[in-house]
Image 1: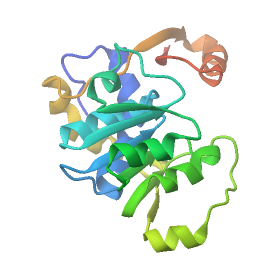
Image 2 (image 1 turned 30 degrees about the vertical axis):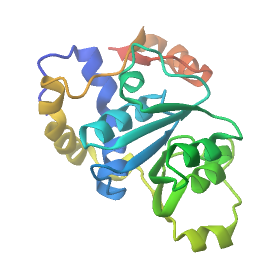
Image 3 (image 1 turned 135 degrees about the vertical axis):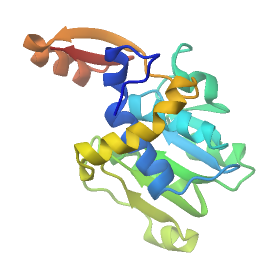
Image 4 (image 1 turned 90 degrees about the horizontal axis):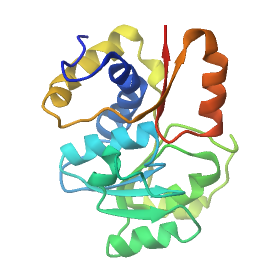
Length: 215
């Protein structure tokens, strides 16, 4: 894969995993189409921002759920039709914004503690994509509601694509970056490789923007 001409090497490094799993979950596995509504749980994160861009480029209506509203400088902030605070009322707000229907696709980048909420946001025969298990690996939900709604539950894991397959996928997105249809995430900090442990600790604490290791 060649680097998009309008991106620095640091920006190019920040898009890899984010856009690979976003594309797999939203398009290849989730089958998102123009005119559908997607709810992105964790929209302020790297994957969430990538999903927002891919969904908007495919003509979807984008609703974002997170603990706080995405920074105005982020790609996700300018693409959201609505921001929904991540609290107990989020599923009801999704229903209100979709005239009681729910979302055609729920892309949950958090999982774990928000898994049941994600299921409750899905429209009849809606798809729920899970990529994480934050907070707990084992979850409970109402199985009767699940099958009555005919919800589709999909797991997406970028690690199932090796470096060659991931490079091919990203190569297909290069033109969108060069035409500014997609934008690299904000880079919050740079760390030399010798300080990699500090960099990972910063990621674990939470960072508004990507952290890049520079060899």
